[in-house]
Image (cartoon, rainbow, N blue to C red; front, side, top):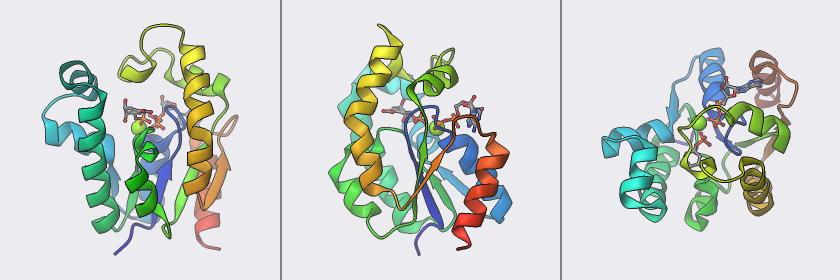
Length: 168
Ligand SMILES: Nc1ncnc2c1ncn2[C@@H]1O[C@H](COP(=O)(O)OP(=O)(O)O)[C@@H](O)[C@H]1O
Ligand SMILES: O=C(O)C1=C[C@@H](OP(=O)(O)O)[C@@H](O)[C@H](O)C1
Ligand SMILES: [Mg+2]
């Protein structure tokens, strides 16, 4: 069985927040791959990055994402960088994939004070986020079957629109 929907997008787009609320609205369960990675590793994502490096994190993430896409029947929220994996992009073909779009300015506001995302830590966050979007925007678009802008829209409004789109 396939998930009802898989959420993708950059850090701060709302994959975890919207995923939780969308699952509630549809009476489904949420599988958040970041949470599963931390449970599997017994450490936080920040700790995995520091202790083992990003490639080790990506390998674990790819495995957890595969299991989620192959077996979770509810809503799946992916980590922002999951789509960097070609194998994951292949698995997403034919799935209902929602790309939560967000501007760099709004993405920075939403992630700004949170230190849990090692990829945005250190250096100039605006430059990092801009560069991240330059690389990833084509990949988010490639895997998406539904795109929704989240700037200036409350989570409740985003969920309302997604429920309508999923019923089409
Ligand atoms: N549509 C929205 N409008 C305003 N704030 C939002 C919205 N979606 C998410 N947020 C806030 O942005 C932050 C990051 O959201 P999160 O769901 O963790 O994003 P992601 O999982 O995509 O990185 C949280 O503080 C959340 O409350
Ligand atoms: O964009 C990324 O590469 C990452 C995003 C994070 O998830 P969120 O997108 O939920 O913040 C988390 O998987 C990790 O810190 C790496
Ligand atoms: Mg998240």
